[in-house]
Amino acid sequence: MKKAWIPMVALLAATPASAQTGQDAASLAGVRSLYESVRGYITASAEQMPEDKYSFRPTPEVRTFGEIIGHVADSQYGFCAPVRGEKAPTMPSAEKLTSKAELVKAVKDAFAYCDAAYGIPASKLNDALTFFGQPHTKLSVLAFNMAHDFEHYGNLVTYMRINGMVPPSSQGGM
Image (cartoon, rainbow, N blue to C red):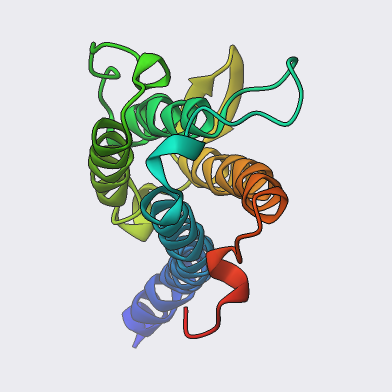
């Protein structure tokens, strides 16, 4: 009877960890859902913009539509490689590409690479890593990536509206 407390202590000790894992899984599910939305919006924007508008820029000081697509493609590797526990692949900058076909492929490939990072186990989300010289968790880097993608989707929306187009997020059904 004296050892009856051992299972109770073990159960109590395990509960916070399993509750934390559940919270982590819910946090990842929320961030992943937003990432999947913006991934779809950016990919659809890249596909919908006519090739002759890839060189469009509203003012000389900002990136062209194509350069934004290339920048988003490049950044996926920088954000998601450390979450995946990898060094970012070395490849030519997609921001330097100019054809619509190359840029659409580049952004799709980059998002496919990042998809694996958003599929990591919840138990790994609080793993520490250094990002931009600062300590972060894997979850915070994934959230940062999603926010960065939405920031640039906002740029794409503006470029599309200036060119008389309806951006994907306003088309319904997405």
